[in-house]
Image (cartoon, rainbow over the protein chains, first blue to last red):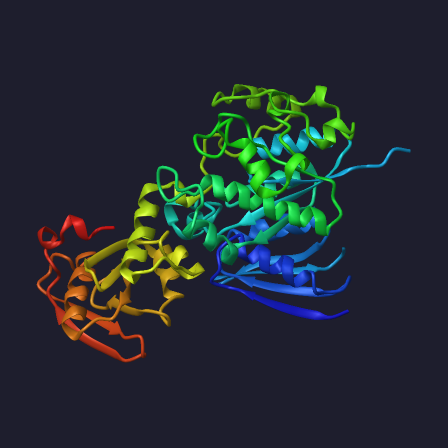
Length: 75
Length: 347
């Protein structure tokens, strides 16, 4: 099980979602991905994308100007 | 046991595509959604930047639709490929820079490619005859079918009964009798069907989904091409057209002046790519400068930027300019009086 990060800062939705989708396509089931964004819309959109595609959001929070979402790859 | 057929549904985030996909699910079809991101999609962008839009829901409506339907959604970045559609539209533009018919053909063509690569059987689109002036006129729907190459694997469930039967109908994969015969701009049938399915919180039926249908945005895009003397753009260019006041005092440079904190923050991310002007003696906007400026140009541009600061009525404000090479300079200048800012400079 690997730990990965994705910097999706300074891009506006849906680009953080697309970047997350493309990154997860390269990962294995059980891998963890930490995505950092600056678009607050990502706080809704990435979890929504994860729900419909079967991935698990372990944690999401705001830190300063950043939105951080930690995802476990499930499908 | 009969085979389960698979459809890829074009999901824009609007009501029609939601209903078209739902009609297929109701017939036992396996449906997955596809959504194309051109860079001009209205979804979320300005909501994410401007404070006045903070109260609006920040959801992506295509994702929301997919979640309501319980289907997967594939969001495809077509920013680079889309340039040729916008720059050289075979069927021309609509009222503004919107190449709606070419856009539809391109998206159906991409959906067809996805269908073939993923072993799906047909494509579903929420088009309704006569609903939109350019891409959904009755005589143009066959053009989309033909030029996309989707042919009779393109099904429009909301108006299918007004059209010739497609392959999924002829082969009995779906029941044509359960499809609809909607036409025209009246939205009541769609709203009634939404109520029947229990959809309440769908995106505004009249809402446009593309910045290219907006006159102000289109004017800025045309200005960008004219200033560069060629039709080209990258993602940053088209993002920046959505933000700030765009002012072109002279042909060789343009100012992008932020209107509020959110835009300041957004433009701040571009300071390495552009020269910039900051007002440091008073609260004020961050201004990006697009073009090659002389020292005198910088002074004049700074006076314009100062007019939008809280020091606008003072005799002098202190500005800091940062050139593209990173060189910084500070000086005091008098803000340009409002009366000297020409209306035609605003793009």
